[in-house]
Amino acid sequence: MNPDVSSIELSVRATPEQIYAVLADGWMYSGWVVGASHIRKVDDHWPQAGALIHHTVGVWPLTVKDTTSVIASEPYRLLELDARAFPVGRAHVRIELRRTNGGHTRIRMAETVSGGPSQLIPQPVVDPLLDARNRESLRRLCDIAVGRFAREAAAST
Image (cartoon, rainbow, N blue to C red; front, side, top):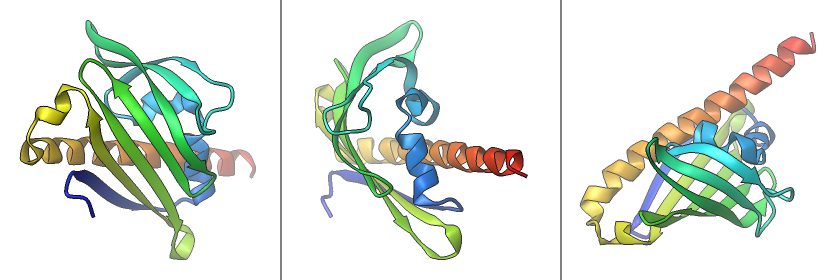
């Protein structure tokens, strides 16, 4: 594995379809991505390759307006993103979903700083920050997916 990649894995009691449903809802992006504070627009063809989410990153009044674009998407298996927050930086993010035993899904999120001044920060400083942020982002993603599933299951009974 590339030493410049922050990689976090989590197992959740939800299906890849349930998790991907949250990833495929661009309006939910700020609900699970730590740092994203507001969604301004989502392309109609999200999460297909080339689609954009226009978002705001940061806490008011220190916010940056930018975009995240889809590099690759394989429903229920993969979402690869180019996340931008200029002038701070840019990141390549890969989220992989793998079905495991007992209705669980293994989620792996890998992030590499790919542009901007953030590239100048030494890896030993960046890695713990990215790991903590990505761990929390995955926890939020899982909570949303599991909460949606529980709500839908309760509504159908």
